[in-house]
Length: 387
Image 1 (cartoon, rainbow, N blue to C red):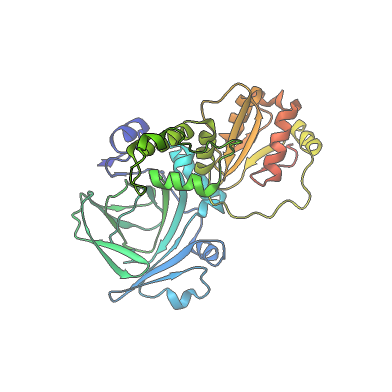
Image 2: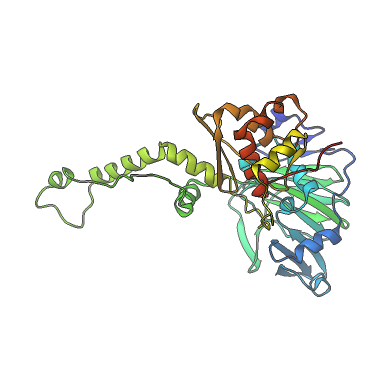
């Protein structure tokens, strides 16, 4: 379970969602992308999810951000953990490109932690896949197999487990990574002051997906089909118990749900749900670009840059009339004729408009319109003219 390099096909076949592994030299010559002071600066912000977990002589404590007084809380063996750093810093967002053979809709976030020697959050189990990259320093990782472990709560905000036997017990050095599938117990302890970068991948349960579709009000159905029982009431029999619900009635309701789930509207609702990323609120442009201004920049071969954390998704199979894609719960629609150009735009972090595939697009009003929407929505920015 120790790999010396990442072979994507072998990894997906033998390890992804199956068993943990360590990949040595996952990022050769890796250096931290930000330092602990910059990470602490993020933890002070209101719109950033952060916490400090510490252990003082066996006594665990957890402090939720925003954090104002680090000196007060950073005592004993402590770790600072900051979620979704990729939403705020381009260099952290680019880390996810290393594992972009996993689709965008599965990506949750890139969490960062800084720990002093001896620190960790205790043995625990997560419900998601994670690649944990070792930054500066070193950390010992122990990973076990799924089982029915006893849960302990040493603090109301800290869930740990007891008694797992590790099948991996290794020290990670800068650039190494440990991959941990869901439900595999693990424990990481810093051997010295160190940084870690956790690329986490979500997988909704069927109930979460169904609830999410309802909560989002994502359906755009002009004429919802209401249940009817013109014949089933008679089939129940005149003397049937009024409290009883027949299996035929339940089957009819389930059949109606199946028709809804098989509809194009449900495809769209699922895509909208999967695209949500909880991106930070961005200030709207004080002066939105007009389509004419965007086209002038496009003609001058400006560069289009996807902003930190933005992960567009689209359905592979679509009709011949329109092409739809989604970003953070928002749908964008354009003419199917420019789909190849839009796919190039969505699947690249930075697009140089001098590329041949964009020559005709800069004159296409559909392309200009979409770029204008993306820039004004602060999902992309457009650079000054290139020299």
